[in-house]
Image (tube, rainbow, N blue to C red; front, side, top):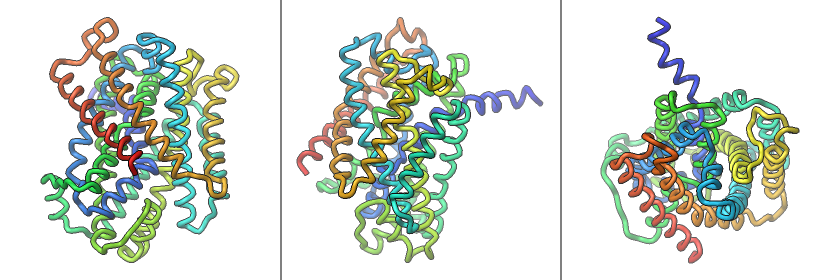
Length: 409
């Protein structure tokens, strides 16, 4: 019996980095984008989630494989193979982008609390204190278990989708039949939906988490399953967010500006339960991402600079790691609490910086994964390389378009 259960037990021991990293992609910004896609275009973007899932799996799998084979994080490998100067400028750019992203997550916490009638001056400080206490005061294993529990709460979006009773035939048709439009609004939304799928910080966090967990090449088959399952789960959640807002807000010609507006707008269509589930999902996503984004930043900055890092180290043994994490949480939450703070401008700038840095990160990943001396027989096969390079080219073109259109508007 034990032999039969051995593969399952091994998978449960290794599961975590892939599922957590992919689910954080559905952060406050991601939920807002998917909500607006459904609210403004109905089911038109459901089909895009199939190629998006493939792209996400391809990129995440390469980073997890590098971590298992080399035992080093991505920033470590970039510093060793591309030099300290390139690493430094990349780290500085990512640091500022992630600070903006952290502000966005605490904005999501504030917005969700206000839907329940709780002031942001209470929810944001308490949220910041909670995520700091969770990460700084606990081991990697305890933190990872908490993050996995947070992933479960994304089911609130799936449940909310069930409440609206959509036309399942129309949903299925829109999922498998591409619906393409050439108007500027549709193209801009496509860039947004694709652009939020692969963020620079995700590659660094996933590889660092694989290394921190002690996953080796011997166990990598299970880590690959972890990555694939995580990518599929996150896009299933995105699927339900799009069709829920499409079946209600779009169908009734309502206008919304963000995920909080979308949650409130759902109230007449599902007896209030849908609103509460959406708001709870936004709170969970905000806290979840506000925990991981600063953590990812602390990992790759310390890797790039050669400083000690890891959740199993004490504060005194990794002061830069924990100090950086603390500073990002405090500053990110503090900015959200400033009256009339330019949050939209901060989010805009961080999105543009992410867009500029993403092509460099993806090219670094592909050069490293194909380095025979580094990866040996675990480097990309010709077929996988073709898929990976095609993914990188498409992502880079769309990211460039995102940056250009952001400046134009």
